[in-house]
Length: 362
Image (cartoon, helix red, strand yellow):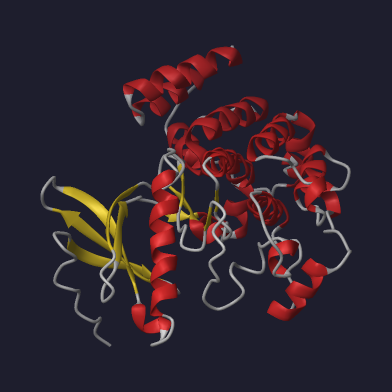
């Protein structure tokens, strides 16, 4: 079946291809001809609102614009422009090359296992972005892997503030239940008032899935999931029980809002300490449990050096760290050559940062 033709234009913005579609509408890759810049144009589908809900649906769109525009932070997609035409309203945003966190989490088991520390570290950037949003009174309310973009360099961008609560807005949102049940907080699932701590619960749910491969309260369907969220039973932590990361998850997934982390900054500090604990790295990803494979070509890094090097690269480049290190070692003869090949993949500023971090390995 042939793809439908692209719209001619959105104002001055010229669409190039459709990037995706969701409940609110479609997103297009487009170009701003005035400054020759690639942008993402999100178009709201007003037909979904029905004849009696157009004003409310359009207000959701305007809320996305206001919320995202107030949240100026490197970890949040920037808003450049918008049009609130009630026929074809759209918002013009920063185009973020890369993939969603959900895509990274669907990698083959071996690749995903190797990337576990990288994906966990990415959430520190998400928490920094949320701290900025919360500081201006914006609650996202739909934090999930599909709304977290990861660039090829491992930078994070939070997307889709379309159901965010702006300040003390009491607007009734279309459809009643707002959010993704697998990641939403109990208070949100029960239709109660929410504050910034609902986002922190969602981040804890994402971290849980990264580490354990499933969502903390996922059931056989939406109803079962909502029942588990609203019940008294806490999340089962399995092998993480009692560990530093387990303690972070336990507090992050508290059903009692008052017992959760008080802020994104507090959550980030606790998560950073847990990720830095050497015993947790070996507990979650024991080297002895890795499947035995044929020796890779090139220089074989000592296990301890490889672990440290991967960790340092992950701090800088996120999920691309493993690929970068593998490429650098494939044809190298020794550790200095590995470092040289790594540096050949980087910009001068990144080389300086990497060499500074590697100095501690000597």
